[in-house]
Image 1: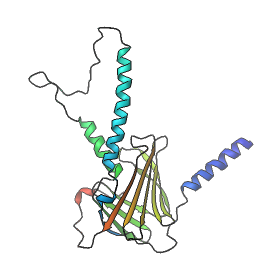
Image 2: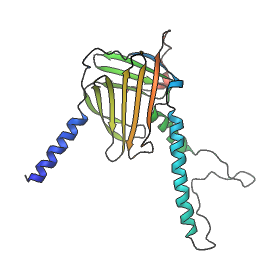
Image 3: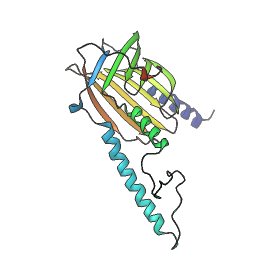
Image 4: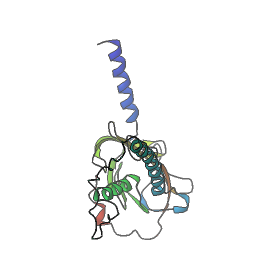
Length: 229
């Protein structure tokens, strides 16, 4: 084996170890379990962040489209939009999101964790159920597994403790990367951080949300959560 190949292997091993370096248990007891209610006044709005990002992307796309159209020869008809909805009885195109766009928006809401509530249950030591209005997951601290992303890609997942933070990291090769972190604040709130990077429509979006612990009875489980993953 050449020195270059050996160095590449060592660097790759260090990279894997760095990603997997999440502990199976915190150094001191931390209880994240409970039913949490979003504190909207103290939290970022992920949908507003997404809307702002999409608006910038659309402006960039529209500028590129106009430049391309200006380069066309005169009297060339515009391209036909095969996905456009059929015209109504007056010949007008009906507006509104297309089916694939609706599914994409639902996936993005799941990926952003757009939910007014969050429930964390400890099934057994180190194993947690994380339930929201848009998603349900079962994760094991200290684990490295493969999971499906909302859009269907297969991702490597690392879960565990990094100091006072409980971390869920998901990475798709040449695709999206999601880093989620949970911790208790000194005031007893649940702080949640989400950071998207890589090749994804959400890349660059960072969300911080604070949740208050519910003091009353916990509502019944939502059957729309779907199976735990």
